[in-house]
Length: 149
Image 1 (spheres, helix red, strand yellow):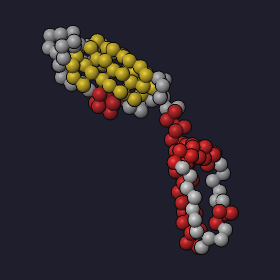
Image 2: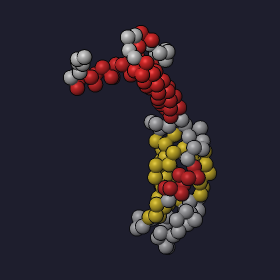
Image 3: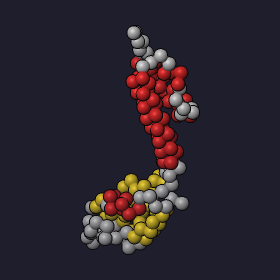
Image 4: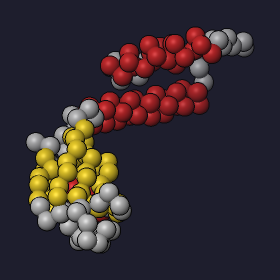
């Protein structure tokens, strides 16, 4: 039995066009592809087709879910002065990620006092969905809302 392979660039191009067609197509098994094959081949084809259909369905739903996700995602958070800062990104992310809004108070509670005797500010960069990035600056002792709604 001889097989023909497509040249690599052509194979990649075929995948670009085939995946959207497969993703939008009816996920029923194309029984015509099984004709004349032995039982082991047929079972392997069915198993592979089922796994591919599940992966495509999961991928399509996760893309859809994340493209409309409007919850807070902390990208960076630092607190301090022009002389010294501390990073509290992971602490704030743990508290805020997944919420629609969060009341934030800037102060030494987040990561200590990085610059004693100097004016300090918290600088937070966060996103509300894929293309909506926001910055928030909050003076020491002040409060503000991180909001994605």
